[in-house]
Image (cartoon, rainbow, N blue to C red; front, top):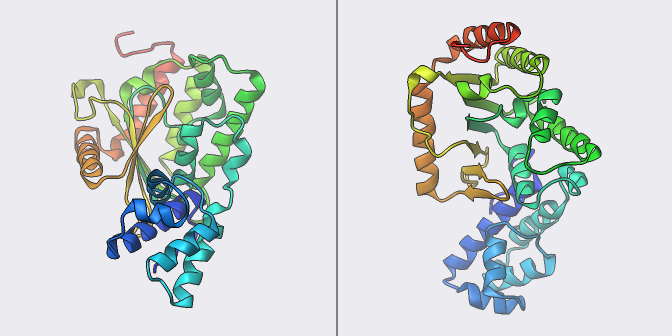
Length: 297
């Protein structure tokens, strides 16, 4: 039995608990159907539990542990304590009224990650956005959001950003397409402040930014933006997150994750080195202040 790492959020704890229940079931060669029958549930309910996509009832876990032959009190107590911790609401639950259901899992994973690697092509990543830039992004979205909902979403984004500055901050490595830096979002002042903020962030030891210039041509990430999250617990797999208009994909199968890791590694080689980032941002900032959207403008 393995316990959670310090600082793990409930989303990660659910995944870890589900993974341990799956391992116990497979060791005993018990089918999901039989496990479901034991707790008066369906096979699909067991599948969702093992993937960490639903909450856990202590009685269900206790019954499954009996079925799986877990009899040592210390082992049972460790997993049953994990049930309580995994069911505890995360801080982001107070934003449920403005948080899309498909995004809730990402916020929980992001809060527990120790390394975040991203590629962005259209917008600056949410963790790096200024308040005014974030507001401008939300205002150009397909959905017309009420002003108070935009304010709530900005509060959520600002709270998420605290993982970059907390006592043990997340390691953030972002690869940004030059298009995202030159695309006007909001006013010229908004873009100028956003670029200045990125320059400031490059001074943080836990933040690394690279830029893929237009001159690099086509590159490895033809499918668009994505994020890879890594966690301190060795039993927790890396998770790839890709966002769509009304939903998102969460990939944790080894083959899928390995493919995205190969892509991000190639992007890092194709992008300008981190040592060039401040100079590039400063050049774009100068052009933005002069009212030019591109080098040709």
